[in-house]
Amino acid sequence: MSAHRAPWAAQAQKKLQRFHEFHASLNNEKVMDIRQSEAATLYVSPGSYFVKLDTGGGACPNISTSQNLTINAGERQVYRILLPSDGSLRLTREQ
Image (cartoon, rainbow, N blue to C red):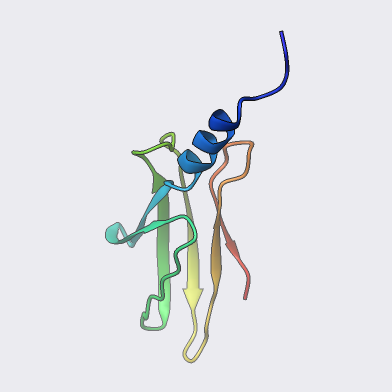
């Protein structure tokens, strides 16, 4: 048995990985769907928020994560959605 992967198999795997779709909720209200490599900006009033992020559909297993965050007046926060190979969905603050 060879460990060599057929070129079409690698190509199919890359296509599957491109179609992860993430669903974001803010205070339990769905605010957007976003796909891998897309970017979005949410403008919110200062305050405390409960953020929930989940996957599902396409090539993604059903995984979710959530966290509380507080936005102060004039503050800008930047987050990145990560789905590492260990299968744990993460919302990571960059700024």
